[in-house]
Image (cartoon, rainbow, N blue to C red; front, side, top):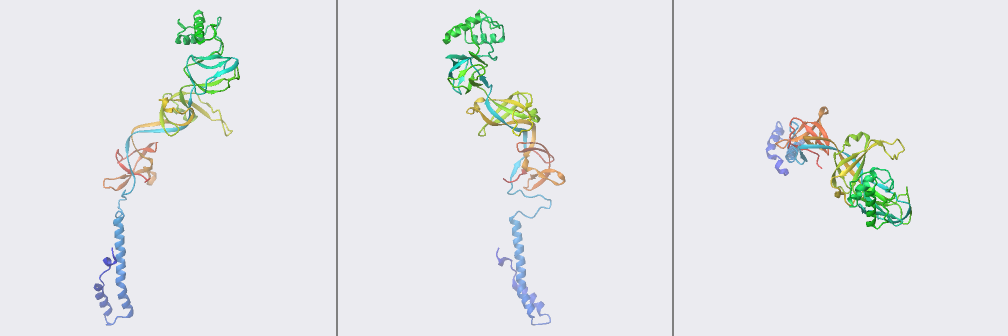
Length: 388
């Protein structure tokens, strides 16, 4: 808009000025002459400012609404959604192989040891002492005595007979008595393995495990002396688990069978379930020198262990479900406003594009969302959120 568009016609103003100036005196005094020259420019400047103000109103959204509503133009929005809201508690855990065991051997010289990372199954050799193999057999009980004639009855005998039956050497029904069937089964097994046929198994000649084991580390080098209490190697199961130490006040999260999410290194999330919960106990280490806090040890089994392939041992993040609200309305937490009187509300976008502040009642906060309810709050309603 040019100055010519807003300035008044000077000739239209001159007659009035001249008439006022000439009353009683045909010659206007010097001050009146100055006024006559200055007045059109004063009027023109006022008109120009008014025009600029009008233009600004048009450019920036119109006059303020007396009701207090505002226009959401150029502001970010979000939609009120309906569904389940889940609150989670984040705890750091350790992913590793379960069932760590220290394996001793009979007295002698270590002549062979499986490399770390090797998986050993039933009837395979873990290590050898004096060139005599120490063999893995299936069973939950550790060997605590030699298997030989004259030994007392016991569950360890039944376990040995069951393992030999699985390998095709024991033909009867396993029981707790060492008898001729047990002797013959051992003798045949030794014959097939190329061992000295004695019909007996010395203490430390076999290792029992409930399934295949993985060599985690070799604690003795080949050539070292072995014997009771002198660990040859450390083994684990082939199953990966996550171990977590919950605080005592978090023990309500430790429910066997409860689902959890595990975030692996790199950000990938996998699912799992709580498989074991130990009684509360003092924490083993206390770095600050104060009283050790009480913890609740929890073991988590992954639903698909293959998803953790590539990690032998790693720090992970575990998400426990603290609370779940089903079929509720929720908005991003950032949409909440502090209203007068200590109330909480949201800014709702109305059909005409303007916005209106609406009070809400809040419920569960979870994952950056918050449960809301109130008049005018419904699924699909658009609310204003801070622009990112």
